[in-house]
Image (cartoon, rainbow, N blue to C red; front, side, top):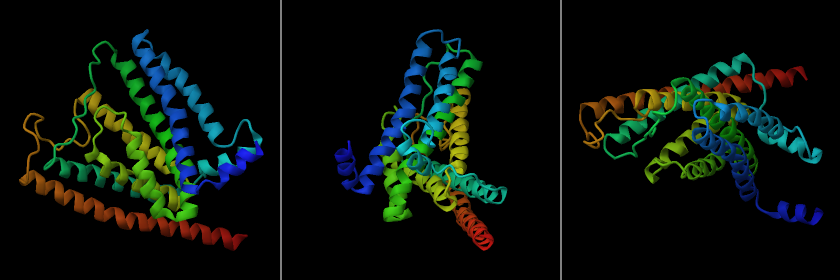
Length: 292
């Protein structure tokens, strides 16, 4: 065991972080995929799958945060999760910056969708599922995505790379892996990689500045829930540029320029919002150092 541990620690930090992060993502997402599939095949009117997954997710979060065996890895797991509690003074700019960043991504993808055919999102045939059960499935899927993906990508994967190679390299690598991890989705396409890298920058920037995944976890869960609710109950994807599916991209027209203006304004507002967050965090750290 000692020799295996020595060999593992000779592996470059970047490789180790990617491997551990992907394993953490698989450990959280695969059980939900299996439970959801079985629930839809057996007793689809009863949301027993989400009930089981809620308990599993609680165990997953506690273990990732340092609880459970083995005790020798407890501190490493707690540190990797980076679920540091934040004050209200940090939560406000973190949520504002994150919301503006996500809005800019949606605006940018809608703009891209005016000139390039984006993959069409479809909820599939959901006629055999009651609205209440469907709502529970949507909310659980969003919660699983928020908790598991922020734990694995912004925590276990990004933090070690940050410490060794800095935040820029960490966020780019995590963004690429984040995109590749979604290739199992039916609507995935290479044209969506800028979206995943941009999302990694929004969430990763929050995690880096606050040293906590909690703001990105909240925003990730909420964003996925909103996107899924619009798709399932409104039959329209969040990044739908507003063109008819049969007509393809709308091209450079009035709607294109409206989307362009929205993107520039929102993205421009996100930059000072992140700077505001950085100032608040620095101020809190200075005050804490002065007290100690």
